[in-house]
Length: 113
Length: 113
Image (cartoon, rainbow over all chains, first blue to last red; front, side, top):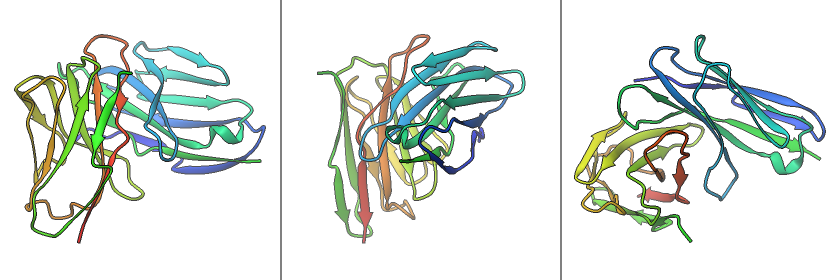
């Protein structure tokens, strides 16, 4: 079973703080790494799809980096707002020739006003 | 609007009964997935299908069965062989091709009493 881990499991930050999470995945057989935001009572929504080592993606105050050689990706949120409160998931796809996606356990973020 | 529809949203069943969860998508996606989430845990892959009439076991397939007779439909049956069926079940799909993101349903809560 391929292991994808996220840390921390949960965190609380004050409004305006910047924060970051980690997604660790197998460094061999890498094909793609996705990030999703999952708000309570809604479906997860896509943030980023990353495929190349060194990739950096940005969407508003949220950005992500990718290191496929060492098997990790960071998600950064600058100036956290209460509406950023959600669970952030990463999903790893190996180069096994299949469309198999393995999700991490998620990081639950709570931004306090 | 295109999307993924899961039904029912909430389901109660007696122990020993088989239960089928519906997942329908009108996105013309090739690949479809079923994930399970337990309290405090991440999404775990039950089954996935890349094309019609073909599917593969995920990491926790025991006690579950699926079919993929039509591109838009991927129903999941939770059989009486599944020891701990009470959980949240999430269906997803993706269009095969680089850079595409996963789309998700809103989930189904199954409680077995």
